[in-house]
Image (cartoon, rainbow, N blue to C red; front, top):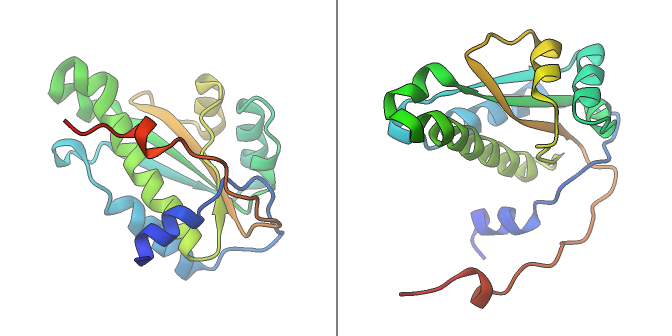
Length: 171
């Protein structure tokens, strides 16, 4: 199996983390993965916040419907869509393209995290207004994803997947 597909299949949603810092060289790789993701019209309408501060992580966990595992991760990345850029594509840009940019970047980052023995999970359930407040975000940004990252304390089994027949149709 080629290495990219192996990492895709090995990645799991991790909610239990070791109390171990992530080295700066690995964080640089995570940032590179975010920056090099595809982007609609190459507008790169995204901004990422890397949170290590304990109080801010707790505030973000509370905003995420009290998902306390978020605060236990050594690093929490919040991906935001930049609404200033998405207006160039009209309604579709406003409602979709910047969110897609963030999604592509986050997936890249999660795969690089896995490749470097880190675990992560995409958290989409949160109250946006509370994330705005916790990070003191400017109004042109919209938080799209919260991603806690760290060394897993345990690895869950792979969840079942739909069959190829259910997921793919050739025409």
